Image (cartoon, rainbow over all chains, first blue to last red; front, side, top):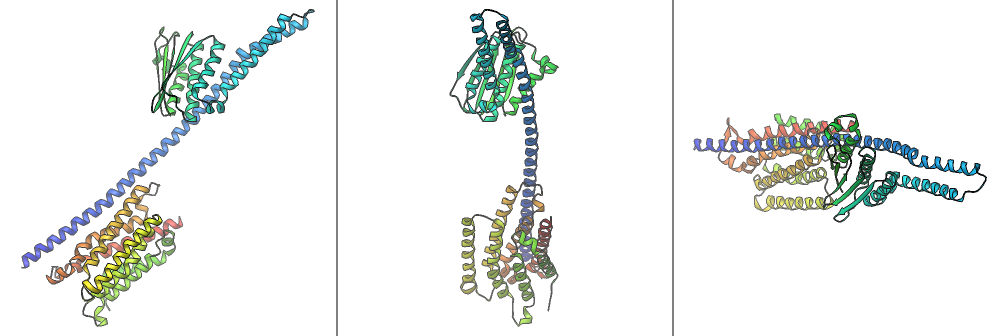
Length: 260
Length: 217
């Protein structure tokens, strides 16, 4: 009887100890789970802060580039036209007879300067870019660039157009704008194709030119790669990616993928 | 008058609760003070039952179960801080258990013996609710302070440990008494319950101090 009682006592104690063990284990596991959860939340917060900082930096860079671009456009394009208008007006002023052809030409030049200014303003206005579809913004920009740089630009689309988030739309537009500038400033291209492919969860934009091409790795490593790095970083900021493929003499293909 | 060693833990816990009452109210667990008063009074009466001329103290603990259940459920409802619907569900469950306790006391196990069914149900309810609350805490809490700095973690953790340890003992009180299951010549539950109580009230005390500290912070 005593042995049986001892066995029972041991069994009860063992069960209690097992339950106690599981209780403590449960608490430890919860505490560990919570620790990991908090750690992940902290890391996410830090990543968010870094991302915000990068976004801010990208915005500043975009702003800076926009100013440079604006200054160059006014100087090279509108400025030239207005100088020409001024010379034409001076010629008219000095001339004793009214040259109607010159007046018409001056008027056309003034109108062209005005149109270029309007087009420039449209391309720069952030609210304008955000409010309309990316396709329309790119079409307008393409028209403007093709006129200014005598560059043939074609736009092709595949799939049903979807709305991008405002932030992503603006960043993507600036990337495309930068690519187009590269095409006529550095690549000496005569033809550019911008292809939009709308997938279910992301948009792929492929910008292909027939320019002189370059060594991508060398360009990215050197000082001249600043603009290319900007393209890659900005694409990353949208949560997407960018890929630049080029070889000397073979043109350039920039592929950007952006989520909606 | 007898005052057993683990009762000091209970009394100290009550003192801390009273001293830290603002902290307890800040964390919506002011109900802990009446719970601890009930615990202390029950324990004093239960330990000194010969003083009142009773042959056993079962009735004291049976009554304690009936009185403490609503307070415990109220405490859980405050800590769970659920929606109105969830609170109503909890009170319905508590009400049903309370009715069973009374029926058990009056008609099933009676007042002359320890109501083991009630004790088992009480411990199971404690285990389920404390697990639910602890899991919720672990999943929801993602601020810097962490789970170990949360008074609810300590209160529920200790309730869980206490209930897991005592569920076997309280469920088999009658059997242990009848078969004289002892460790070092003392009945098993008289060995285990005081230690479990000491752990429970130490946890409570820590939680109360945390409440006060976090409130002043």
